[in-house]
Length: 175
Image (tube, rainbow, N blue to C red; front, side):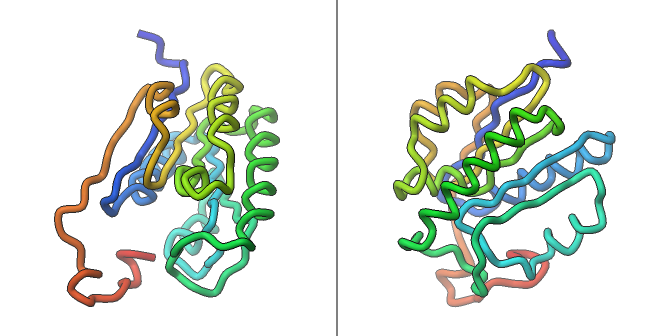
């Protein structure tokens, strides 16, 4: 088995926990002194628990290219197109730099699903990943092509969700 080979990891599905799983992986990698980059697509709200803790962890850098005052992602809007393109340019730059051991593309599957990012760009991206770098793709609706390229795929399946009981997002649990 090759320990130094990076992985392509996909966290997808309709259930909660995709970003949370990716953040857990980021914290684990940082604990071993690995450098982590998190690029958030569609999201633009920074007053979250993950931002507050990541600001205190020098091994993890987090980026957003969209500014928003709302917690919920919702359906992407026209104004998400330019920030998504900016995020893709940032991702390409980060991967080419080889500065990071782990690169997390948070909600990129949603960006592809809604046509903000071309599915073909994602596949080209997986081919450009240097040996030893792990890239994580999160978000609902991962494409079949991405699932086929991935080394690890986890699908989060919603069984029950408090939102359907009219229970709002909880600080420290949802953001």
